[in-house]
Image (cartoon, rainbow, N blue to C red; front, side):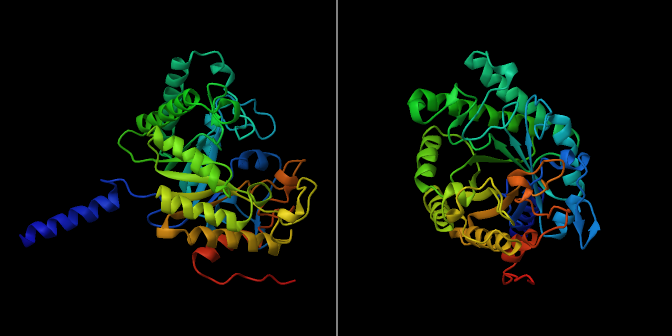
Length: 374
């Protein structure tokens, strides 16, 4: 009997280590992530990233700052203008760089030729006139083919987002929900498309375990989260983890984020990641509501905001808060590029890494927030 017990314990330990049973995302560590989907565009435009005053590879600098996960978007047939470049070859190249740095990978399907977000969820042009059943099948086959391509190149994602900020649905108008589209028929279509995407991930991954994330915006809006996931769960969409976006000028106070995360943990009983956030280290003319910015627009203010958000996620009940991802830290203002005029980057205009890059790991490690020299 003792021999059997020992063998069972060894088997459980082996499976836990090598994947016989699916493990919770981030079971081994808190996810500190960065969406650096624009890296190749920035590098070709002349961006140079520096650490301690010396040029260094962007992935290396982020890893040295405590980042352990990279998030990458993928478009279907992007026009390759501006930052809309993320087709399969482009994205796969960055994914292989992430894996070479021994970092986890989150792949974000936009299911569009361009940006998909709460204001727009446009179908790819090649899918525009498909009957609904054909559209569902195309979603599954396209998703499977992408995942298969990543797996073939030893760059299989650890996590996959089936859609980007899909609070209003995706692949409009077929999968649109909310507002004039708030009815059971639309929710059935939307969730059918989600299930097709999830089936595609499973098909492409084969016997490899990949975590499925559903990503909404409105990270500080508990009511929106309840409405969305009540409908998702009613229709038995099989997902593993929730991702939320949180930008204070759009989504409320940090206290609102805390309330929403607590709801997700205690009522939905799901792991959750703040999969997009950001904060400016300097004033810019794109942000119109200074009263919604809880910290000064300075390098110290950026650090303090990110430290506070990370601590909030870490305090989510029952350890359901699994990580924080920074959006577009690489977009410094070279040749006119750079979100929020480049002030939302984690690098200054000359490419020097800012203190905010270490706010996540400082908070995750329980270190006191660092006050920068004035």
